Length: 308
Image (cartoon, rainbow, N blue to C red; front, side, top):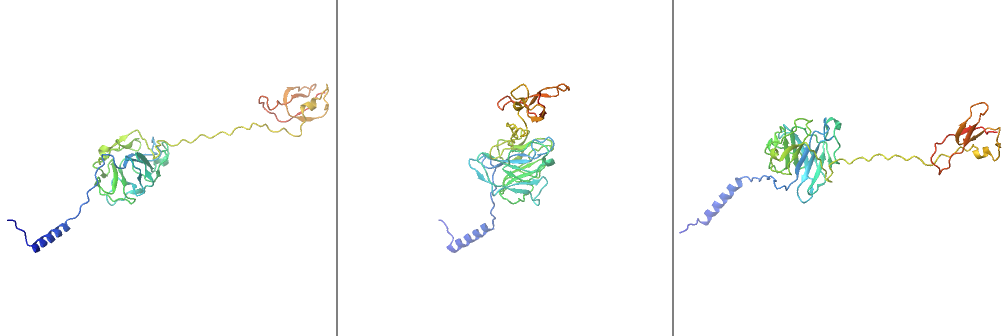
């Protein structure tokens, strides 16, 4: 025979159970890793731009969207925290703008060592920032917030405000374990994600690469070359002759003796013979070639004394 407590007792038990449940806090389920490639990741970071022997003159962080849909970045930010940073150390944050295309990239340029004295120019960045990460040790954060995050030191995998995070070198903040880092700013390598994988383990997802390939949303991997200057063509119209000259044909005349013998005139032509002796003081001149003839070097006006 079954026994059922009286109704007042059932109500009392239900009330007591409800009170106990109210005392139990609700726990948010942490975000999980994205090994299937369904979220934007920090794909490549070159953080020694401008240093001696640098591949590029500026630092950069490249994002990649493995999904089939463009994603709006206007509520996200890219942040950097020093390697020794703890919860009280606010990272530098750069609010992102625009969208990252499906199966595409988004390039954020940063600061530069040595004022960008070394290295090639980046392809046109999708966003220019003043973010200036260390080349050998630190933490890069892609955040679902435009405000600087307060992160505990240690493993940040599963933090709901973190879309992706890369701790490298000797950083105190990472996903599972730190990624390797260049040994110095002259060790020309980038932090490079392997096949867009995101297993929430920086040590296995990120490796060093001497092949550095910044890519922007347009798919460009190199700066647009500046076209060479166009030379100004030389003018083809010869200058007009002086107006106070006498044509050679007028000087020569039609007979054996020049009609201008004994006078001094100006003409334009090419001297073809000179007689410097006192017996033959004059010069022999011939007219310039017409415009249709082969180009000839022009002479300035000269004084010719008609020969008798």
